[in-house]
Every structure is written in C-alpha cells, then in structure tokens.
Amino acid sequence: MRIGVGTTVWAKGAQSGHLDGIGVYTREIWKSLLHCAESQEQEFHFTPFAFGRDMPTLACGRPQVIADHYSAYALRAAAIGPSRSISAAIGDQVDLFHATDHHIPQLKGVPVVANVMDLIPMIHPEWASSTLRRTKNWLFSKTIRSADHLITISEFSKRDLIEHLSIAPERISVTPLGVGAEYFEETPAAQRHQTLAELGLKPGFFLFVGTLQPRKNLQRVIDAHRLLPATLRKEHPLIIVGRTGWKSDELLESLRQLETRGEGRRFEYLPGTTVRALLQSAAALVFPSLYEGFGLPVVEAFASRCPVITSSTTSLPEVAGDAALLVDPTQADAIAAAMLELLEQPEQAARRVDLGQQRAVDYSWEACARRTLDVYRRIGGR
Image 1 (cartoon, rainbow, N blue to C red):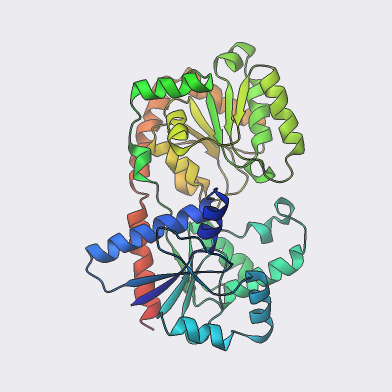
Image 2 (tube, helix red, strand yellow):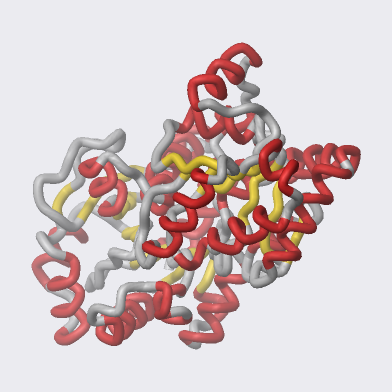
C-alpha cells in the first residue's frame, strides 16, 4: 500500500529550528511506521508531502509540495470542492493520504486519514488568536469532517470530536502518543551534576516545562510556589523551561519577580539532553495544564523517574492514572499542597515514581505506529 504522509509542521519546524509537539509526532511516527512495516514484512511505501515553498530535506526526504499556501488551498476546497489536478497528482502516487497535522487536504478518489489532536481553538477560543477566528474555526471543522477517518490521541479527545463536531464514533481511532527511548536512559551522575552546576542549580527544584501561554497555567504554578514556606521556596526553587507564547506579558513580569526574589529561574530554551537531566534531578514536574489532548510531558517525566503533579481534568487523568498527584488546576492552594506532600512524604513520592515508569513503558511510538498501520489497512481496504 502506498501512503502519502503530510509533513508540513515538521518541515516548518525544521526551517525555524524549533519543532513543536505536532512536528515531533510526525517525525517519530514516520520513523516508527518504517520500522513496524519492515518488521511485519508488510508492503507499505511512504511518500512525504507538504504545503509551502522551499521545503527542507528531512529524515524522510524532501516533501513534495501540494500547494504554496494551505489557507488559500483549504478555502478553495471548502468552497468548490477538491482540486482535480492536485487529487490526480497525488492519486497517481498514493493509495491513502495521512494528514499527520492540521493541514488536511481534500482529495477526490484518495482516502484521507487525518490526525486531530484536540479542538482547543473551537472549544476555548480565548486561548487562541482572535484574528479571523470564526472563519478559521469554520474551515477547521469543515476540513475535519471531509476526512474519511480521524486519528486522535486520547479517549478524551475522541469524546470532544463526537460531542462538538458530531463525528460518528466508528470514524475515530485512538492512538496514544509515544515517549522517546532516550527518556528512559539515566544520565550519568557526573554529567547530571555538571549540567546543574552550569545552570547554577542544585537537585530538588520544582520544574515546569511548556510554552508560556494561558492554557499551560504557569501563573497558578508561580502562585502555588509562593504559598510554600519561605525556607522551602529557597531550598526548592521553581525552574521554568519554555519559550514565550501569546498573552504572556503579565506572566513575564511574574517570572522577573520570581527571579528577583531568588526563588526560581526561567530558561527560554534548553537542549533535550539538558531537559532530561533536569527531569532526573527535580523534586517534581508541575504540569497543571487547563486543557490537554494528551499531555506528553507527563509521560516523559514518568519515563525519567520524575514525580508528577498534574491536572485532574481533560485527558490528564486518563494518561497519568494513579502514578501522578492529580489536582484541581484552578486552585493554587491545591497545587501547593501537592508540592508539600511530595517533599514531606518521600516514600509515597518514590512509589509514584515506580508506578510512573511502569506506565510510561505502555506509551511507545512503536505501539502508536502499529495502531496507525491498522487504520491504514482498514481504511485503505475499503
């Protein structure tokens, strides 16, 4: 079976030097699909495609360009239907198209499987840019409905698709995300100590990893940390790793004050090896996000043997199970109480670390790829 794979977000991330969650998903699922197809001796051939100009060469090769601008293409397709010429050009090469990101082509005569990670722009427009939001949401919902089958990353996100877009359950498959094998590898103690020394840190800090944006709820993490006794705030500072997102002006001021008090540090970017060393040195990852379709940082922390505090809402309880401390993300005092519990009850923290690593083993890119291949067989077989 010949599979076309959408790689737009991966390609743009490679161009900018910053690969976001969807870009990482596309890269990892590509590698795992190739490996699974070979190990199962299945006849699958994969060809990368993308929207945009001057596509870079990726690990999958240089993507073929579908159209220069996705927005213009999608609006035209929504208004008058699939482009015959684009459909024919892609149809000559593939039997099925997998849109791994939100750049979903409408194709005549070619089944389309589309990934929809979550419906945040539609359900919570206050967390997204207001520019042309109504038009964008209309176009987003129309392109989602145009796909022959949808893949999402949690049962929670599947319920959202059913409830908010009236998608039939049989048109949706759940393929949980995977965690990279490197997160299970223990960083040598000497290397870990050197990394912390270079950053001016000592083990036992609280760690937040994520983009600075309202949905990630960092302000309440800062507020919770401020509720801890002064001696604990100094001994267990709050370390933030995340680039600046939208609606973050007030948050940046809170971070400046945190650093002025000597109770925390913020790093806009750190390499993956450094982040893994931090996870293996932290008292806990504090991740009380207000909405997640999956919440991959939780599983990455589990694999790194880092205790986790996360939200009791959206997909996070489904992913974390009983391995994390679950809190109401809207209550700073609940987040602070969880921080104190992990510090004061090291035996319980160690128990959750063991449970977390066991849980992380179940989330692999290989398992995600196997489920994806099953979708290809089912939809392509029609």
